[in-house]
Image (cartoon, rainbow, N blue to C red; front, top):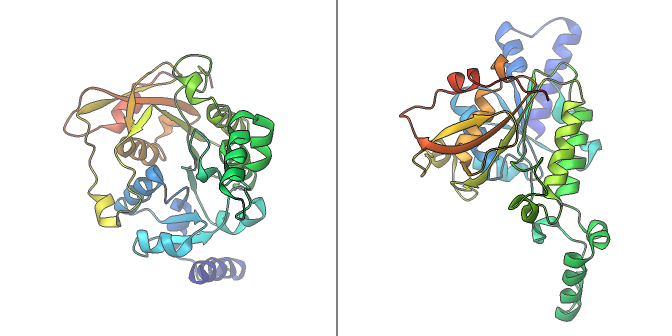
Amino acid sequence: MKESLTFTLSLQAGRAEGIGVTTSEASAVSDRVLVTGATGGVGQLVVARLIEKGMPVRVLTRGVERAQKMFEGKVEAIAADTRQPETLPPAMQEIGYIICCTGTTAFPSEKWDFDIPQTANPIEKFLEWSKIYFDAKYRRTKAKNGPEQVDAEGVRNLVSAAPRDLKRFVFISSAGVERKDQFPYSILNAFGVLDAKHKGEATIMASGLPYTIIRPGRLIDGPYTSYDLNTLLKATTDGKQGVVLGTGDTLNGQTSRIDVAAACVECLTDPVTENMVIEMINQGTRPAVIDWSALFAQLPRNSA
């Protein structure tokens, strides 16, 4: 973290004095991608693909050492938390793109980071979890990392902190955000994950920033949380199906995390996908190579 901050400060100082910034450095700055949720199932694959393409990557993380180890020191890691807006400004310096891969479980779990006393005995814990599951108001007061905090408030904080000259804000949402009353999405949204994703989408769309929103189906392949960078770079989907894209919320099916990560990276600089909502699933025969430009070019413009 110290090295990354030193680089940023020295680069800013060079600009202030009118010296020390070469064309290649300026280009690298304009291409730098900030990835949130970088150590999660899709986020790891996104970072690996960005590294493979030679794009400079900055990861926003609560665990700098873990991120540096996972990506073998090939990324710039900054300690920050999307739920804490005061931590975000340093991560926003000199970036051209944001890919938001943050998320949490759809159903209450330890990942929601509930405020339950460590000293609670088994009976007290059982009563706490019962109230968490059956009392929505109580659940909201206890959760520190639930969908509302991550997908709604966290995204809002990211948008507020993002530079106004950002080239693209890519957000991984979910299929079903517009079909929350239909099965199986009504079950998936039992604890508000689709509501929160939809709020995040709305914030991005209203921000004035150029965006691409990806709505995948049920995720397969991975996650690769315990694997190293070399494994991530070689990751291939176990699925044998192709990629089907749309521009609404009508598709049903499963989606490879590997394909979601590829779509996030490939859409960054594709003008066709600017200010677009893209739904995606795996279906049909898979070609030897996925031609993302051709897939994007076939998309009708949506009204979002």
